[in-house]
Image (cartoon, each protein chain N blue to C red):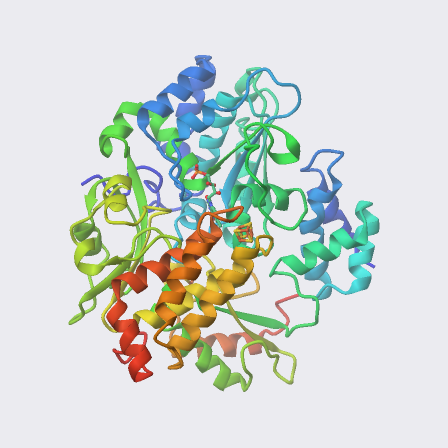
Length: 163
Length: 427
Ligand SMILES: Cc1cc2nc3c(=O)[nH]c(=O)nc-3n(C[C@H](O)[C@H](O)[C@H](O)COP(=O)(O)O)c2cc1C
Ligand code: SF4
Ligand code: FES
């Protein structure tokens, strides 16, 4: 179900917590599974429950509570545009609108080619570099229309760098 | 003025995140002295008390006093946690400390662990902060390699293990007991207090939790003395503080200045307003703190007491500057949406109330407001405040209620004319 590499990573994370606190590694296990498989299917969540020796309900609870977990497949690149107040004051609505137009999707939707999912999210803790967005592991800050277009071109060009 | 001199003092150096650079500027010197002189734990706590350092995570609780609550001579593990969940709109300082000064945070935690007898620690970093996570993990590896972490630190009988725990996306995990639940692999829902973490924290064990900036202030205090730190600021408001200045300023950024610095000077440092603009309002401490009118703010100095006098709070030092180009109703609607999204849902006044406040704000913003809506906002607010498990709900009420009081005319205009008084466009 999960690759050797993912299992080894989960085992490394497991070692951070006391022997009788297997559940503490749950958030890490879900992240690692999602990194490998793109999203969290019921099957992988049940697998993780078995792996940690905890009831599956505890896995679903966590997976549905936290915003970074995807329970459905998403585009290869998830564009998370911050729409909280400091970004809003610096034009985040225009960023969202520009991306919406360029990609032909509304926030919450995925492009037909499966490359991009557009999302508006709350504060990502980079408010001084507003407006900003996150794609994968990276923050892109002080966005302009030009830098957004350049970013889209770059992501289209190397569309296999994520996962 | 003493600027960027404590927790961000190495920010401008190349590779400031490396142990060699940190050590080259005296880093880990305080820890060495504490351990090699076998300083008494109580002596450390009393030095921190003297410094008047107060928690930089938002609540401003005196750090030395908090440390003194950790029970002595208990069996089992005592834990030390660092809150790096930074997620309140306008707050972006802990990220920079972790990116530029991870060793300062780590050294502060090791000194804290020694003072409180903690043997295990976790730095809870919000999951989106992938870059800071990697930097802090790299710094931990360096610190282990140098013998500052692990068994028998610097050859003494003090041992301390420190790990990064990644969050998974939820502002509420910044609340200290929700953070502990998340560390235990559960939904991040705050616990009832009491019991407080010092008696029942992570895994039910005695636990102390502090913010990144709080810990990062400790090495300088121990290197130079509590009195030195105190005197940088003013009585009861010791030291310097990072202010994240964002919004409508020309040079947004993190400015670490002495407590008591006039807001006017901070605004200048941040490049001032854009040409031709007037200061309309400031949220001085992050969106959970009440809004202050522009004119009143110009008379405030940046410290706990002065900001409290203006009717707001220093919070996490997240100064959101709002000029006259934007409609206040629109700004507050956006803030209200955050609290609706982020309520963890376990208290009815918060779960229902945050949504209610947003819906009323939303219809006001969209020209469907009614005359009685302003009173409704105040009434709903007063029925939420003080009736919930954690402070998220009060934080969601603050911007709404304060803005209705300050900008009533603008709200009324909105209701009568069904659109903004100003053209409402953001930058
Ligand atoms: C809803 C909510 C969110 C919070 N978020 C944070 C946060 O992101 N970072 C933080 O340090 N403190 C946050 N706090 C405050 C913590 O509960 C706690 O007071 C703090 O971590 C203690 O550290 P300090 O004394 O060093 O400030 C939050 C509190 C609440 C009620
Ligand atoms: S006040 Fe809101 S966020 Fe805090 S515990 Fe209650 S429902 Fe959760
Ligand atoms: S408001 Fe956008 S990163 Fe904080």
